[in-house]
View (cartoon, rainbow, N blue to C red):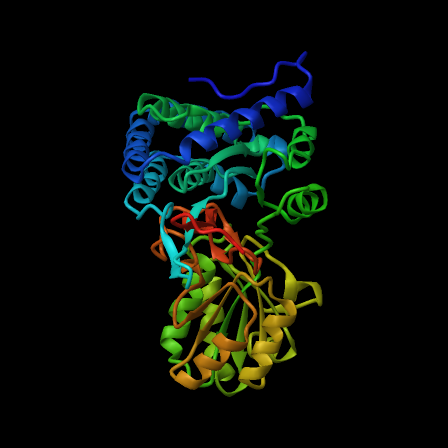
Length: 427
């Protein structure tokens, strides 16, 4: 089963238009497919990914070999790399989506009018999703699975870094979709390196309902600037851990190390650590030692550097930086509110955590921090669709409309009103 490919002599606009038109037709067909059939299709796709593991790994080796030529960092190459365990994780993620309730057709609200009209607010698919993303091949399967489960067609425009891996994963998924009798064009990969293809799709608001960029800030800003359709944004993950004066310091160390070190090159890894002045003397020296054991460099404010002599001086830019690697900024704060102000000033509205035994402090932090996901006494690494029970996700939205936080199947739906009468006319 092939994916959408643009021969060199094909007009780019016509090629992209054809992809979008096929996606629109597939979305209309998919909207009427039952949840059971969609789930069966996703289970078949997971099985096909498992069966094709050797071909997927061979394709991934081509991407990894080319990665240094694209200037990818060690963290970026780690995000790109597949092994049998990660391919199994991809298949399991698709399978997990199949177990979720079908959001399509859910009656959100229902009321009866005095004239007998019955008014229902019903959940429906968004339609056609244009998803432009970078580097990680597992995102290809996650996005396709979530879109299909919510009854949408998806146009995937992955980065060149994972081109071979993404193409092979899409081939497996399209084969399963076709075998199950669903429209294969509900999942299409734009297989051209021409960056102008992105601009072509972003102008097709007559065929595409939403654009979702997932990657570096430059990519997201380009999509926001050029898109004629709504954009669901996923900006940087400058995630914070705040250790309150009422924190259990053993818990705080465990959570901080996990949030920063469990996997550094991902958007929900901690990049900034804030510590209340009352516990800084007890907490900072041991956490510095624990982070150093993972090769993490600390840059901090003056108070941090007095307590951790090996720490470098943090610049103004460090407080807002998503490192995606072995570096963290650390600041000592005078109060809970000072921590909240710091997060709101420098954070990216992604994921922020408080470690505290004081319920009032946790409640105040959760209410006042402007972020998509607040963690109380838990690692920022749990901001993930699978970990929060949503199955695979298409991204973590830092927007406030129309979705926020991890975006699963429900976040790829909208609603319509269905009004049923018995011949009523308006006077």
